[in-house]
Image (cartoon, rainbow, N blue to C red; front, side, top):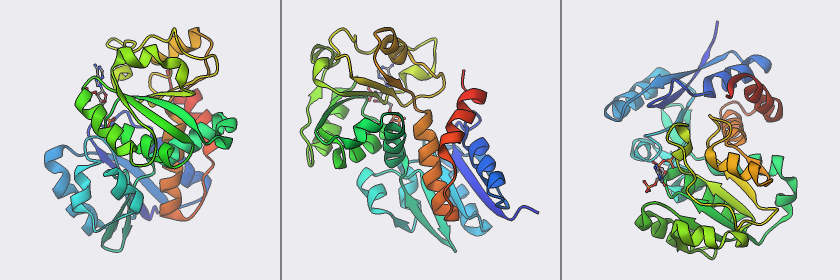
Length: 280
Ligand code: ATR
């Protein structure tokens, strides 16, 4: 009989690979547990959290659109979740709900796995496209580790200024228009698209032209489905190294899994398993 229960709450969740990933790890580590995705709309969040408290569930993940709104419903926050202002992982310690954010560290571990040379660097210049929730998690970890400069360009300039100001507490940072960003692309060693533009292939389009990029600039998109957004296709066409969001999904999930079970799952083989079986 399966004993421990875990959840993903968000809307939509049907497309999520998290259930496949966590249930695979539970089976391979012979843990009697089950992870399921529950569709929870904005209106249902408070009620869903109350039910989780009463249910004896061991932990859960939080995805769009609840990563910020869940903060007020938890009992405790990790320092990182508090700094970012968003939670993606909750540990249920008895009836206490403790919120963490593993997105940023998961992103960095995935990046270092694919580009180990970046782990030795310290003074990198990074361009982030987008200034939504995901951008904050990634910017925060980069500002603590390998970045000396993080510039932000975003369709809504006000949000670019806001994230740039937050980055400015620890690294150099400017808010740029798309035109300014593409003009100065040769200054960046890493370009990261955090926008949702590539999610719908029929609406996907390039937000910046890549003509001025450097030969070794790494292009990253946080989207993994489709495995190549317009940005990554164009970067590959130019011969630049690219990385999609699958490694971030796997490494953020592995960190959540460790918090829940105190066991380290196999992230490397999970990434190839998902890549080969689930991505188009
Ligand atoms: P997430 O939590 O995944 O980051 P989000 O907070 O909704 O999601 O942020 C989405 C990001 O994608 C934002 O930077 C958004 O730009 P705006 O701040 O201008 O809304 C960006 N985005 C979404 N659709 C876009 C589009 N068609 N063109 C340019 N940027 C877009």
